[in-house]
Length: 251
Ligand SMILES: Nc1ncnc2c1ncn2[C@@H]1O[C@H](COP(=O)(O)OP(=O)(O)OP(=O)(O)O)[C@@H](O)[C@H]1O
Ligand SMILES: [Mg+2]
Image 1 (cartoon, protein in one colour):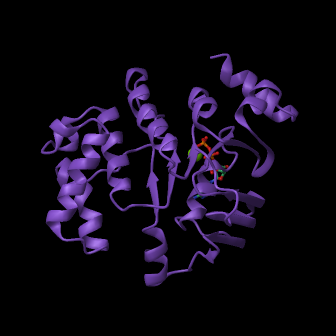
Image 2 (cartoon, protein in one colour):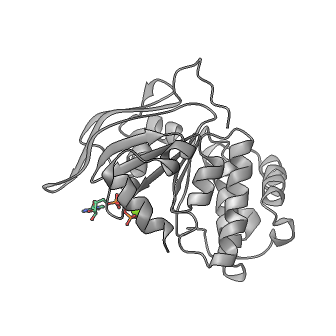
């Protein structure tokens, strides 16, 4: 959680624009995330949160502007892009585990295939990570045999297995029943405390208050507010943020 302010930002977006057809979804986005920093992205449905996060690892391609990881522009395609992507883990709302593979296989797949890490080493590391998310007894289970919260924790272990420099989360708990949300947020809070650099879209305001170094509020594709969480929640500056908070906090 203690951001390193001496070095250049790990992630920098400058002047990023993105349209779908004639609908401009992102307007001139400038955003920096420093190593060790946890940034929570908030905004109403349709404000462009997923699009922004997907532009970071080029699941979507920005129309203009620059996206750089550690000062290096995100490559357009090919091996260079694959190499940069390997440094950026992503956890989605829909866990996206391979259903025909066990937990252990899900967590070892990318390191062995993409990074050519020897199976024995990859499995050793996978056991460690799966234990860290509290699922040491589920290594041989298939995703369908796990609860949603357990599947999402496996998805986090899988992302960590690539030793990412940055983790992106897009509403990782939105598909979960309330009793499973906490177990996933606890893992994320732990990661934040250990210094993982994270850009997180979530509607879990408790997590934002507890774990975020900075809250970035998006409205209709524009960043309208950036603040420390205590400041944002206590006294949002923009009318849109006040409106958003009044809706989200009252149910
Ligand atoms: N592939 C696409 N094609 C066309 N329009 C899209 C596409 N993806 C997103 N959009 C539009 O872009 C806008 C922003 O969508 P986005 O998914 O980024 O919002 P969001 O803030 O993540 O919303 P939510 O909170 O509902 O997930 C929306 O109006 C959406 O309909
Ligand atoms: Mg979204």
